[in-house]
Amino acid sequence: MSDADLWQGVLYVHLLAMAFFVGGQLLLGVAVVPVERLNPDPERLRGIARRFGYGSLVALAVLLATGIAMASHYELWDSGMLRAKLGLVGLVLVLTLAHLCFPRAHPLQAAILIATLAIVWLGLDISR
Image (cartoon, rainbow, N blue to C red; front, side, top):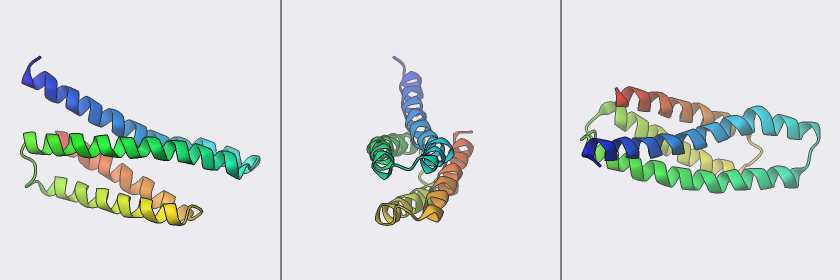
């Protein structure tokens, strides 16, 4: 395996974790929560959210590990775009902690999604 193949694999794992995190947010917001409102079962929704939360924690750990590795390998630490992305990552972490304290605060959910989509946008710009 060449060095280029290794870093392509690291990028692949990073993007897979990102797809899980963002895709899960979209699925919950667009499909699960609206359907649950039609036939409310708070325990079921809590169970779904808890399972996604566990998966999200794993995805975030993978994103952090692979992101740090790629930023170091490609010497991106001085990039203003990377710093903006990391600032948004910090914001998402703070918003997520706030959401854990106030799970019914729908504006927090929207803010997390918008900030996450901005992170993806910046990530695409960095990769060019």
